[in-house]
Image (cartoon, rainbow, N blue to C red; front, side, top):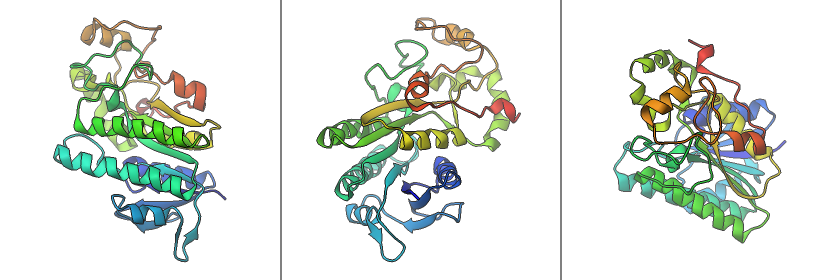
Length: 285
């Protein structure tokens, strides 16, 4: 049985990831400040800004476990504006450095972590993307301290994989994570489409986010790779091309987009991770 440490396994996406990995036959250790919702996972309360704690949790914790096969790093202050800018950066970036460095010291070569759609230049009304569907081909352009931290993490990942050619360090640029209970609000977006234009009406079901994590862990890739992870559709019922023409008339399309297809391109994730979203808000409203 493969033992996977999940940092932030008690958070919104983390809960789905922990359960999905357990259901897929993995042994899971959850490093967080509070226990998660799935009692099958081992829980170790951990301060990720303390390198010593992180290193110990990636090697052994007394009689609870010894050795770790893979690492999923999700823990962070999860969005801009939740705390002062300096506090977000001072928590998220050192924690990610500690996780990457401790994994290197522990000999863990399979690492997946949560980057963010925000590195693409959100909000798009202020920073329109080069084209739709948005892809991973243009340089990151953070516009908040939170997204700056994610951009720094991606740059760190490039160098950690340069130092260790055997390392796989995959950054998943998750769109806005949603649980089933969030979908009741989606029909109201049609009355104010501008309210969701900031990320071109994208989202990701937490269960599909968890699927992406497992696929990244199980992939045979090496080095650093970043993938946009979003649902196959938008949060809207209005066709995506119509929304783009209304709110982003200057942004060209690199290929045809049909119906309510996502404008956050998941082509690379489909091609390289075999990622295919299975859940839509339309199934629950």
